[in-house]
Image (cartoon, rainbow, N blue to C red):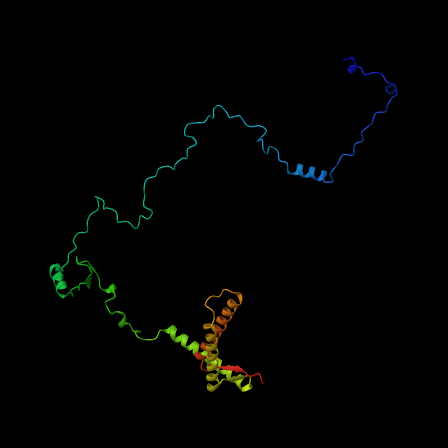
Length: 260
C-alpha cells in the first residue's frame, strides 16, 4: 500500500523537468463577424416573443360583466315599406266628405247588353288528348300544326348559304384567274383527259399487284422480315388508295411545267 502512495525514489526524479506547454492554434474568427452583428442588431425587435415588458393592471372597477362579449344586435325598429308611394292610397278620414251631386245619363244595362251582343265569341284554344284518361295538351306546341309553311321565307335558301355560295364562287374565280395567268407564262400545264385516265389505270394496276402480293403472304407472321414486308405492303396500298381517290375526285388537274 505504501509503495502505491509513495513511489520508490529514483535519481531521475531529482532532475528538474520542464513542463510541456501545449501551444494552441489561434482561435478562428469569421470575416463576416461584424456583418452578422450588424444584421442581428438591425432585425432585433423588442418584446418580439415575450410580449410587452409591462402590462397595465386592470382596474377593479372594470371587471368582466356577464354577456359582455356577446355580439350586440341593432336596435329594433318598426317595419316600414321602402317606397310608400307605390302602395294604395290611404283610407279616407272620417271628416272627408264624398263627392256629391254628380249625375250620369248613361244606361249601363243597355250598354252592357249591346256590348255583349256585338262581341265576337272567343274561340277555344285547340288541344289534343294524348292519354286514355283524356289529358289535354296544347295543339300548337305538339308539332302537328303546319305553322312553319306559312312563313314568308318558307322554301327559300337561307341567307348564310347564299353568302357561302358567293364566297366559294369568288374563290374559284380567283383560282381560275391565277391558273390562267400561270398557264400563260408556261409555269402550269393542265393534265388532259387521256393522260389522267392513263395515270389512273396505272395506279389501279399497281394496287392490284400489291394486293396480289399481300394475299400471297403467310398467315402467321412469326419472323421480323415477314412483319416488315406486310407493313410495307399495307403502307404502299394505302398511299395508292389516297392517290386514286384524289384523281377521281378532281376532274381538272394542273401540274408544274419543269421544262420552263
